Length: 185
Image (cartoon, rainbow, N blue to C red):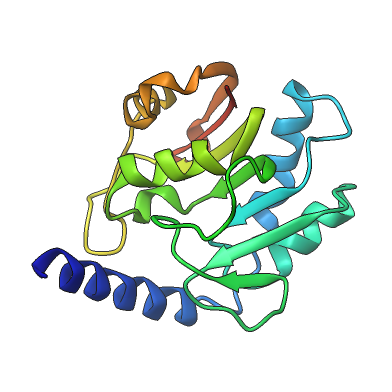
């Protein structure tokens, strides 16, 4: 009971923050993220792509402009039909549904990172890709809950049998942000 109430309080706080940022344009990051993935992953990228926590459809539009034909968003708040309302801790998609999960500035908000990474591994097809971008070097709080540090630390949150391989990663010193691309399965 307490866990359920705690999770509902967490979701309400995340919904409030997502709603408050609903008009923010993520393009300044998304263009750099797409260029990073292009360095390690030849086109066409594996599809469909699940974009976690996009807030609005702009991140999806940037991915489409980059040539991604099939992309869907999942967020706790949505004003767009391409963004489904849902929880990254308990995704309603069948197993092996996506070729790639795109998680830009969302995983630091997880209440239970191991559960989220288990869900990501579950919804990815074998050999699927996980792109992550996240800030580092900040003081954690009710919204920005996890500072994962180096991308190697993310491996500790993935379920052991998922057979993860690192494709490449980069630290962007100018914005205290890491990018990482992993192969799952």
